[in-house]
Image (cartoon, rainbow, N blue to C red; front, side, top):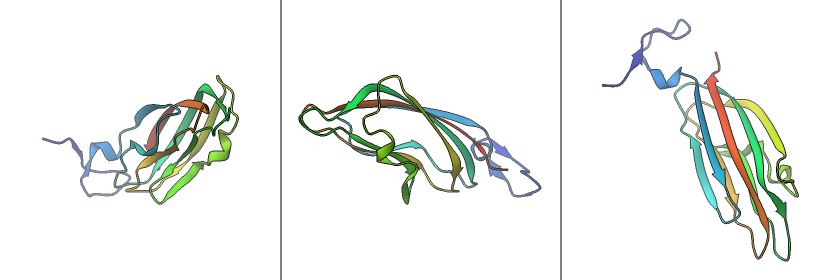
Length: 132
């Protein structure tokens, strides 16, 4: 049985409780990771999101290339953070991003792995609350 709430902001339609409950999600990404990673699954309603990223390994090119990381939503993969944000970032540096997560869009982290001895890694934590 799924939990449901009967009224949200005057809307009489029944919604899953997950649409209105604040949530927190986290992920760690290292220099060998690549692809699109879903950090949070989209819900029926738009949400506000606060994203905190802590660099866990220096982003450095070495004799190859450093990894690239973008944070966004499906259809706009750099909506919150473009790859240039993390270029040459030092371990221990913290970045904070905030914005609106579109209804039905997943919060995603898109990565390209480092090449050669390039380095870089981050921990990502996101706090997600209903927009209204």
